[in-house]
Image (cartoon, rainbow, N blue to C red):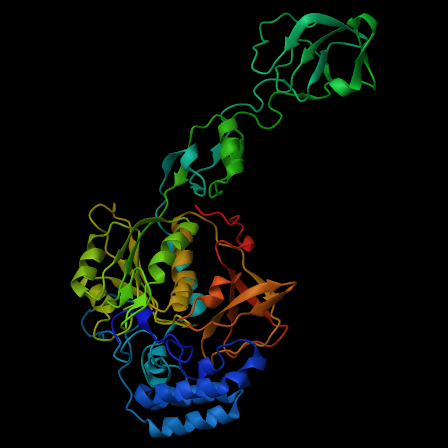
Length: 543
C-alpha cells in the first residue's frame, strides 16, 4: 500500500472503519443479516493479516450487538490473530517534534486500512486501551476549527459589484442617498393637482428620466400624462392610474372613476431609506438582491471579506487523472471534487496540484504556499510513504487536532503553519484529509468547512435535527456521519456509505450525525446539509 488513502480497498469490508462496523455499514437494520456473510468474510480477512488483538476484540463487541454469529467468528479471529500493541500517538496539540514528544503514529501503515488504524484499543486510548493518544471528540474538533476561523484578524477588500456575488460584507452598508432620491410616480397614469375634474394639459407627458425640477408647477385643476418612475411635477397631489380614469368628450376633461386620495401612487422621496441609514449589517451575504440594492443606493464597489485562499495538494503515486483504473492504479476522485466543493464554501482555490508520494515536494509546497489553508489528501497515518506528519514536524507546525473520534474520517488532522513571508503575519492552516473519498468528505465538513466559514466572515449555519426513519448502527465510542435524504418529515439513511464510497453521498441531502451507540427509528439526529442543498440558506449557489 502506498502513501494515499485513495487506493484503499474499494469493497465495503475494507478501508477506514473496516471490521465489524462494515457488517453494519448499511444503515437500515433489515439489511444487516443479508450482508452478514460477506461482511464477516471481509472482517476475517482483515483480521488474519494485521488486526491486533485489541482491534479484533473491539470489532467483535461492535458486531455482537446485532449479529451473534458474526460476533462469535470475530472472537475466534481475535484469539488466533494476537499481536503486541504498538505505541500510542502524540498529544492533540503542541509544536510537532519538540523534545520529549513522541513521533508520528506508529500504529498504522496507511490511513484507513485496518481496524488498528482506526484507533481501536491501545492505539486510541479508548476505554479498555492502554495508549496515550486520545482522538478529539467530533463536536470539539468542529468547534475548534470554527473558533480559529472567527478569530482571524478582520480584512477588507473593495470589490466591484459584478465580482461581489457570494461573498460577505466586511462592514455595515450605509445608504449613500435617499431612496427614491425624488418623488416618483408608482404607476402609469395621470399626475393631477387639486380636486377634479381636471383639465388635460395638451401635448405634455412626463417620462422617466426627464428632469422636471425646473418645469412649471402643475396648477390646481390640471392633469398631465405621467409614466412609472417619472419625477412628480411640482404641486401635483396624486397620480391616477390609467385604468381608473376616463377622458370626457373633446378629450379635454379627465374624470376619476373612484375617489382620489392625496398622495396616492406617489413614491415619496426617502420612502425606502434616507441617506446614512444602514441598509445591511456586516456579515451579510452578497446575493443578487444585495447587488441590486447596492447599485440602487449608489455603490460601484462593496467592502467585502476577501475569499480565503486554499491550495489543494493531492498525494498518491497510484492516482490516474483520466481513463479507467488499470494495473493497480485508480482514478483520482478527490482532485476533481474538492475544488468545486471548496468554492461553494466561499473559498478561492489558488491551485490544485498532484504531488504523488514525494516528501520533499510536499514540504516545498507547504512552505512555499501563501494560501490561508493548505488542504492535503491522504498520507495522514504513519506508513512508509505517509509524509504529512513528518513534513509538519519539519515545517515547525503546531498540531491542533490529530485524529477525530468520527467514522468515517478519523485520521484527519488540523495544524497551524508558520506565516509565510507575504502572509502579512496572519496564521495559516493545514487540514489533512484522509484519502478515502467519503472519509475526506467527513474531514471537509468537520474541519475545513467551519474554518473556511469563519475566515470568509460567514455566520455559522443554524443546526437542525430531524427524526430518522430507520435504525442506524453506531460506533461504540465515536460519532458516525451517515449520508441521508429527506423523505417527507423523516431522514432516510443511504446505503453505500463505506469510507471509500461516494455513491451514497452523491445522492444525499446531507450527513446525519449519529452518536456513539447508534440511533433507533424516530430518534432526532442533527443534520449537516451539503453546500448545494436547499437547507443551507446559501440558495444552492455555486460561487
